[in-house]
Length: 93
Image (tube, rainbow, N blue to C red):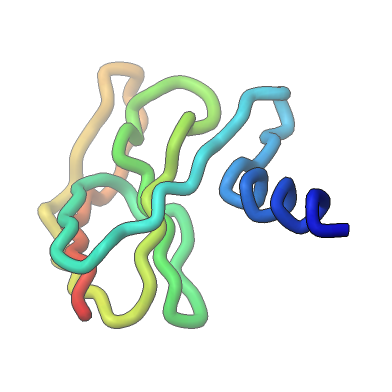
């Protein structure tokens, strides 16, 4: 039983996307700041894609938890024509 719990804790941050690629959630620590596109914001949790212009699913996502501060850096565009709003997010205590 103990081994299965350890494996679960090790594999928990890694998600399998629909195209078979792995996506890793990076948990933000106090003082971390990142820029990118917000993928999800709900229940005190924010998922930020730091490479919104990359094709396909992001290979990593930065996960912030309340309290965090966010500010809009304005609308941006990718070379492929995709538009998104860029945010700067800082993990607070």
